[in-house]
Amino acid sequence: GWAVIVFQNNTQTNHYANLPTNTPAFRAELVAINIACNISPTSALTNIYTDCKSCISLIKSFKKAATKTKCKTDNNDLLFNITNILSLKNIKIHWIKGHSTSFGNNQADKFAKLGAQSNIRSKPQLNNTY
Image 1 (spheres, one colour):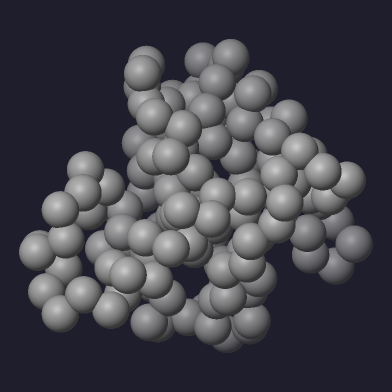
Image 2 (cartoon, rainbow, N blue to C red):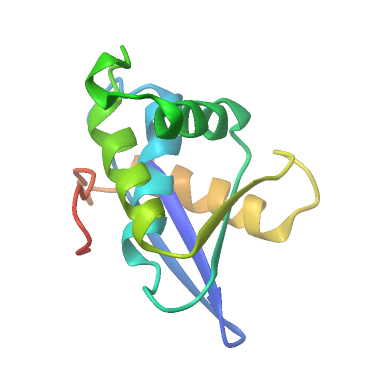
């Protein structure tokens, strides 16, 4: 499953759902980043925190790729959407240590597990609507 925890104006909103069976954890992390990008406001700075350094690295290299189609990855759909949204919105993606004392990261892990066990099915949103 995936989860996105939104903290805004002292309020926590949880978004989570299941993914198809055998979805790799790496893709689940990218789905969460993609959803966070999609639901982020257009006019305000959004900080996205993930414990997946390799996702951040791949997003950065995908942004720099001269032609997105030359990037050989099973996650081109998500990477193309994420990098497109990053070019349109004021979003910063930060790494945070996983399985640590970070409340937000622990909440996201908890809700991702709930999502994996739920009947709520999700397909990654590949546009700016959620």
